[in-house]
Amino acid sequence: MGILGTIINALAIQNALEKNIIPTRVLTSIPIPAVCESYIRRRAINHLEKNIVVIFAAGTGNPYFTTDTAAALRASEISANVILKAIKIDGVYSDDPKKNKKSYQI
Image (cartoon, one colour):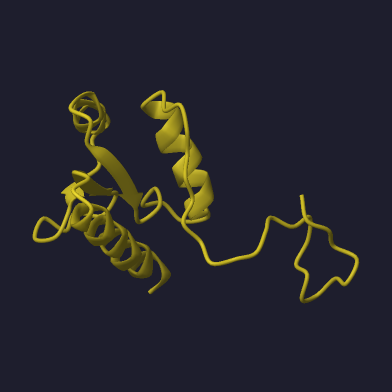
């Protein structure tokens, strides 16, 4: 369910960007051709060369890898200059702040 949630979120981001006339493509590791494209490295690079924003979703398609790991991997594969992470948190922590009161924002 979490991986499908990342796809839904990516489509929502795509919708918001395209309402502002910013061309985008959602690429996923899980084939869902009705709503997004399958991740192929060269396809992602071609989109970027055409000034199209690429949104990655659905992780790597492999178990035990976080979506953050997938984002870093995909960014490395396409030689991205920047990674933007859309998440609803107030910071990046050294530990789970709900479990460890001594965690701190990095």
